[in-house]
Length: 282
Image (cartoon, rainbow, N blue to C red; front, side, top):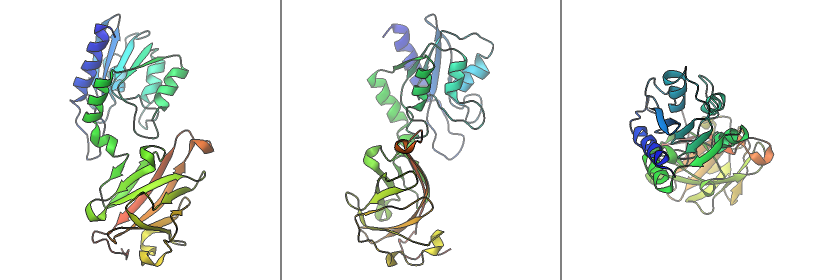
């Protein structure tokens, strides 16, 4: 790696640490550096000039909008996004600006983006390189909480979206005695397998006919004898952990590349009573 590339990757990691989250949600720390003809043209970090603004968007639209950037190299600590509600995603900006090479520090752990940003850039003739391993480790450390959000949610009530083909299909809900280690694998284009073996679950059962959590009057009433259950989208499963505590989980959406989707992702809603009780009321 040339000296300028070493300096650019290090600079991207350094400026990424300036990121401050715009709200209470977990967000990645992202730094981006634009290099042309061996010189740093500009750099930016997520949220630098606007709450939630991505680093690439800040570079292309707020700092370098009038410049011809064709043939330049972009160094970014996080894989460019492929989905953005407010404006074009970063991968499209990069293609539009005719960037020649993109150096990526870390693939996005979000299953809606993971590897798709890199794939989209390659399909458009953009060369992809990766940061050296020691800097990739530093980026993962700086973003450990963001990465872990796609493996666990310690809250007692919430939502989760994760790639069930990563982390051996495991996702953790709750904390302490109210912790539920779940294990998943794909079953179809609208269904998912959930297992009680290789977890801390004593049982898992489908609450047939329950449309909302309060329909589960007594979670212990459902059959949990099977090692695997296969709920469909919209169905609710009840979980009991080894501490005798209960949780209810609704399958919101299942996406699988094996069934024609662009990515693998399980989205669910869940609730754990603060006392772990089996009764779910308002």
